[in-house]
Image 1 (cartoon, rainbow, N blue to C red):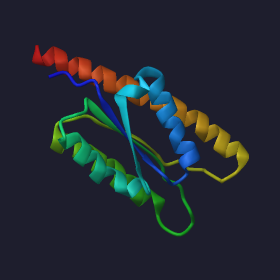
Image 2: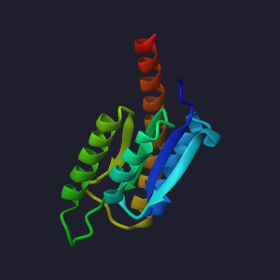
Image 3: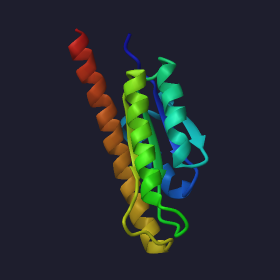
Image 4: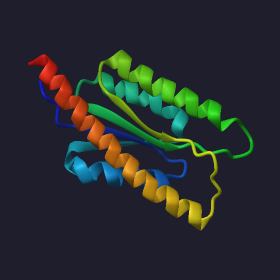
Length: 144
C-alpha cells in the first residue's frame, strides 16, 4: 500500500520559529496531505512520532524543534536524547521519522537571530520533505 499522508510533529517551544519548518515542508508536500501535531517541547516528540509511525497511516513522520541553551540545563543532552529517540522510533516502526531538531551553538533571542532561524527552518522543512519523498520512492522501488 502506498501512503500519501505525512505526519508533522512540532514543538511549541519557540513555536514562531519552529512552525516555519512546516511552511517549508508544505512547499513540497501539499498541506492537505499533512496531519500536524503539537507537543510542548522537543523531549515529547519521539514518543508521539513513534505512536504516529505505528498507526500505519503515514509514509513518513517529520518532527521539528529548536533546542537552545537556556542557561539552566545542558541542552546538548536534550538534543541528543531527542535525535536518538526519533531514530529509534523510525527503526521500531519501520517508517521514516525525520528530524528537524536543531541545536544551534549560538542563539540569543534577538530579532537578528530569530530572523536567521526562521529562514533556516523553512529550508530544513523543505529538506525533510525532499527526504520523505525520496525515501518513499526508494522503498517503493525495493518492494517492486
